[in-house]
Image (cartoon, rainbow, N blue to C red; front, side):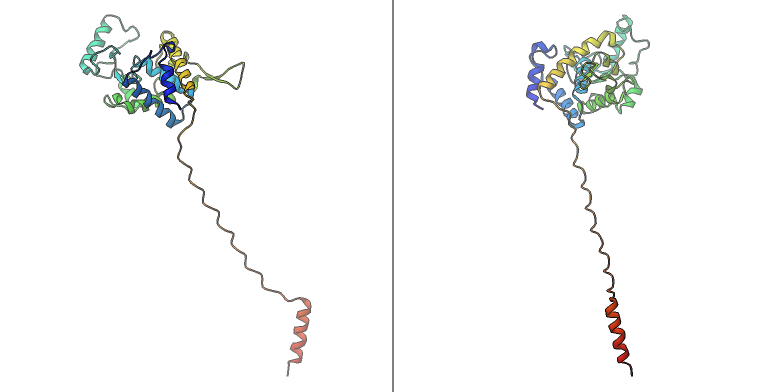
Length: 253
């Protein structure tokens, strides 16, 4: 994969994602995701979907963040108490209409590349409050969650399809795939589709191909050489047996 071509594509203003430049943090995040995709052999469509979700969930930062931390935020790592206070204030003002019951009071608010909330979801993904903010760990949780359906029960494979007019041409339902991470498809599905198509183009420009890094298969042991059958004992022909019998008669006393 040509990484330079990938970044050249996402930096184009027409891409509708990063704009004309990326920060080092954005590059580091993309690199970690691309490395994991190549290690796993993730398909181009699935990788575009993963990149688009991370882009959306982190506000384009491509780094694990706490909920309420945005690209313009000066404090990149506010205390848990600060995040809880922010969420309480927003909830009291009716700014979180989709929330029926505050989930953040015990500190289990959104963290990571994908904003994981609720203690049971942290446990399901093998995360702690601290590890969810580690880039490598969060990348692993993102791939596991989206591939296995650990966020909402929906997984990447649920949104693969074949183009009707060309049955051999695969496609992906980016709009609907928002349901893998969150049930707000009506509100954010279109954004996810826009981001994903930009990432898909960048991956194609970079020549990305699905190729899992696999260890060489163990060589099969060579078959044992066949055991030679013992040669049969020589048998006398009828003539030689007759000669032997005559000689034995003459030899008697």
